[in-house]
Length: 76
Image (cartoon, rainbow, N blue to C red; front, side, top):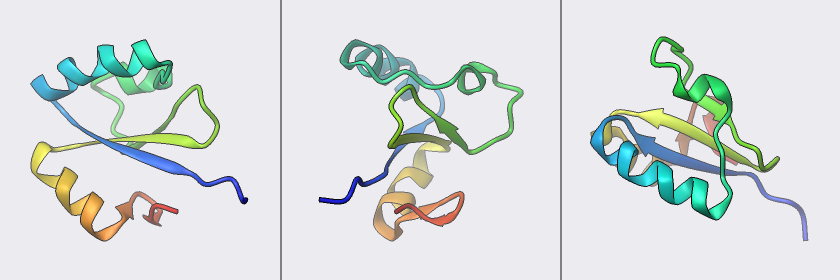
């Protein structure tokens, strides 16, 4: 089976503060720039090669999931 890439859409703010410890506990660590609020990128790598993380406004998470949208057009 071909390796698949996964993108996790995380909302900014309080929800992110609650979800981040869970992600770290299961071993998914965002790259350093993810924690820099001045970093304007949408897509960040994680410590796992096929998992990327996007940081979006809370009401945009559903849109990204529903339409497969991502910073590269579509998450593949």
